[in-house]
Every structure is written in C-alpha cells, then in structure tokens.
Length: 114
Length: 109
Image (cartoon, rainbow over all chains, first blue to last red; front, side, top):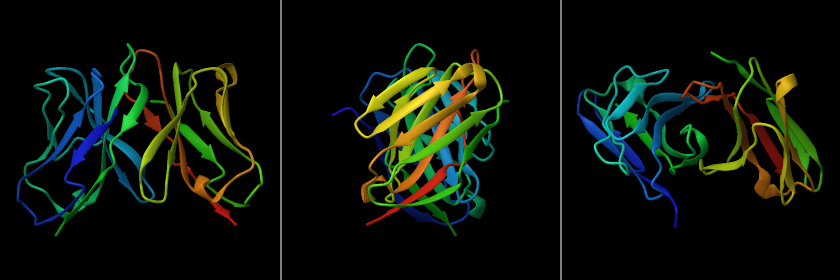
C-alpha cells in the first residue's frame, strides 16, 4: 500500500530533550515536506526537500532541522524542543516533476513539549 | 507570496444537502489541490485541479485559473463528510504549497 509513515504518532517530552520524528514513504517520490498545524494558524510548512541531499526552509523553520540522506526518509529533528513547538506535525510526499503535485500525507504526529 | 482564502469558514448541513466551498487565490497559480481532514486528523488528497473540472463520486471540483478561484462541490452530504476542507496552491517556479485556513464542515444526521 502506498503510504507515508510517521513515528511516533504521539509524544510528550520536556524542554531541551532532543527528539526526532521519522518519516518514510514507499512511493519513490522526490518531493517531501514537513508541516505543522496549530489552531487558528492552519498548516504551515517547516522544511521541504526536492530530492536527496536537497533541502530548503519553509515558512517556519526556526528550531527544526531536517536531513534527506535517502529518497524514502525525511526525518524532522528538534535539537532543543520548547513549549511553542507543541503542535500536530505532518509529513508529506509529492509526485510530479514539480515536486508538489498530489501530496500524500502521513497520519500526523502529536507532540507536546512540557 | 500568494494568499489563499477559503469561504465559508464554517458550514453546518443536514445530511443529504448539497454545498459549495470556495477557494480564492491572489495570483496566477499552476497547482491547486483540495484536501479533507477528517475528525481523526487524517489529511486526504481529494483533487489535484490546477484548471478545469473533475469529479469523484459525490465530490467535484472546478478551478477557473483566469479568475483565480476554485470551487469544491459536495452533493448529498453524509456525516462522514464532516471535517475540515483545505485548498492549497502554489505559483509556477515556486516549491511551496500555501494552504488556506480551511472550511470546517459539520454534517448532522
């Protein structure tokens, strides 16, 4: 089944404790992206990647890092999480030559930073 | 960047009713997608429709790129249609999809 898999789905952590949210897709998509969703603010892009070793900032990259060492994986790293990073996070991958056609989203990861 | 505005922000329907959701965008775009976020938070891609009309069961979408809007039609609504509907768009030469704020739909039996 074609899918984007995120882990963990739920996480409660404390300020400053490094964490990684993994994202993997099995559709051979070149484009991958991370979004966060907050009440009243909608979906905002954190980082995206057009291909292996090619990443770029989205609208809200502060406090996050990403890497794209393999085509299928695009982990989101919070080096020193803070309470304002409490949010619902989505990973997505996209088909099409432009990279952003027909996004497929993961199930989401709900993160709470205390 | 482009602005994406959706209307109405909230919509309440009785099961079986029809509805139209609108998405306006501020600049010419080469990508327009509609998504449904169900009450459990899952985001499902409904349509990729930079122009023209598409239909999928009870749902259809039309984008008039020259007039900078897209419409999502839901016919004979069901309670499972409840959730938030997002449109997202991007300009040619840009790699970022911009999402609208969404339309929250509640369908009551």
